[in-house]
Amino acid sequence: MDEELESEDPAFEQLYKHIDNLAPNVYAIHISPDGSLISTSTDPKDDETRCVYYPPLSTIQRPEHVKILLRSKLEELGRLGSNVDLVACPQSSDPSKRLIFKYYFLFQHLSFAWHEMNLWIRLPKHPNIVPFDSIVIDELEGRFVGFTTIYIPGGTLEENKARPFKLKWLHQLINVIDELNLNLGIAHQDIAPRNLLIDEATDSLMLFDFNFSARIGMPGYSEARNDIKGTLFTMYEIITRNDDLRAIRHEDQDVSVIEREDWAKHPDVLLDHPVSEFRRVLKEWCEKRRAGKQITTYKDATNFLDWPPVPDPPLSEIETHYVRKTVKEAKMLYDWKRTELKEQGKTILNWQRPPQRSNLGDPTGIE
Image 1 (cartoon, helix red, strand yellow):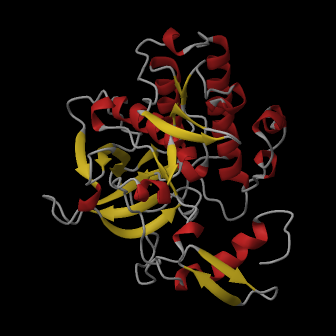
Image 2 (spheres, helix red, strand yellow):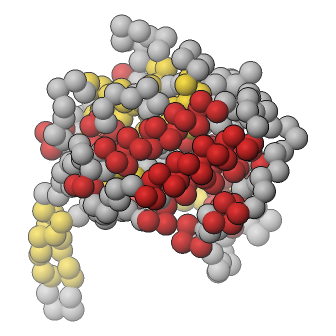
Image 3 (spheres, rainbow, N blue to C red):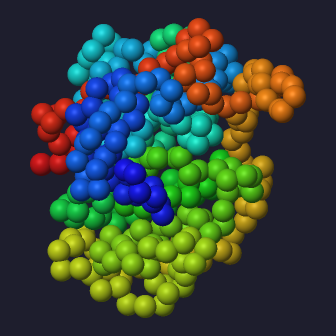
């Protein structure tokens, strides 16, 4: 596109239209004002791809029971979202077993992936937490690129709204939040229907997705995202199917509004107990938590979890060009231009894949 844009959105919109039909070695495209593809570039100078730092496996303080899995052993079955795939491991002892693979290839996601993995591998086994499966390393240098968790079919509570919601599932949610907050010093910070599953084999609610989780009182923790508030909003949304009150910044969300008002059950929602019973359980729990011991820092918790920070990469030599001289400096970088790594003869981990296959069916397993 030749015209100057106020935002990147129009460029992304045009890229989405053409990306599935572009060859893997296309680095730039030229689009007409009406969205037609004028030309493509395979010139490496147009390659803006950056390669992120992947910590060595040796930097992970891994509990003995945690398994290691090579990325090359995974077979893609579906793409569930950004950096989240449904996969299988055909060469394993159970080739039909399905897993969720979370990974990263952008610097902005490195810290999230590192902390989520480190938290999840340390969580004690709990009937209402989706189990961790394996740390995934690359097939080139054995570095941490992501992890797998057990796949629970049936869709999230956001995706599958047809089944009746049971009061015992609310009790299970309360139990697992108390375990995280009070015993382990962990705030999930993203309690929502999209992060809750029902394991039909055990008829149990399951919590997953710890990418916003944090040790209470540590960097990444936000009182505006506290789990009591998240649970109240979640139950309100499940019962009323109204999520307008949470469609604003966390800091601006006022949970007292839903505590005061009537909850009008949506006509399509099925519950195994009256709305009043769900609200009674929530009210008693909120009062108990507010009157009980307050965890202001994760080390106040009985069995707090801890783990190391993201390890630093080795120093890189950077050349800075001035008018009369070039200065070489050693700097710590967390990503590098792919073209520069190629020029240096460095090994590059490839994430290039074909367009998502259209014959995978519905990966959620919802009938």
